[in-house]
Length: 200
Image 1 (spheres, one colour):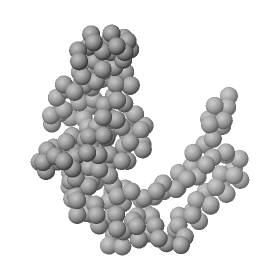
Image 2 (image 1 turned 180 degrees about the horizontal axis):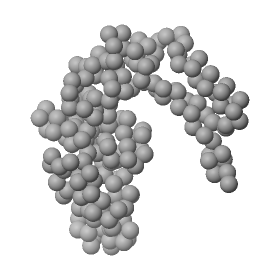
Image 3 (image 1 turned 180 degrees about the vertical axis):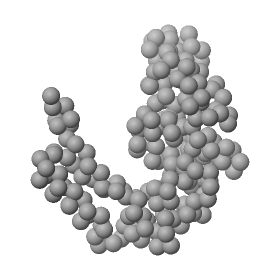
Image 4 (image 1 turned 60 degrees about the vertical axis):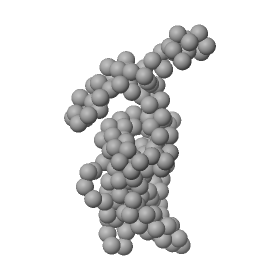
């Protein structure tokens, strides 16, 4: 389907987004330094965050279905995802997408460590009590006494977080300790309430 056909069937805005994603596909990621790669992407997309969001969603879908491809192609796509698209997702603040891509990259580039870490996470999840619950309660108490409206949440453990984010490193991946202290990488996060953030 040509861009003219897209415009006729779906309108100018959809045509613009399709054209932007097509240009983004032509960006040569290569081995360029990260800032240069992002500059190329911004030029190709006309600074439209929607185009980059579509690209990230498309790559996430591709990563989920890499199992049918040859091993070398899986690794090549995973490395580009690790080096370029995961940092892009982080810059855009799309944490859920970034975390899933990190785990998928980890599973492809370090399959044995990935399976081992998943087993350890499952073992920790079976504990009766979360070791960080007490810390989170203490943070809530301090914030409440200081009059700061906030939610304190404990991020769930993921394979990539338990190994120091191997999706962003070229070296080997291993759990943080022999006992896989996944809890050490799960920090309680205090998020101010929206009403408090927008208060004049």
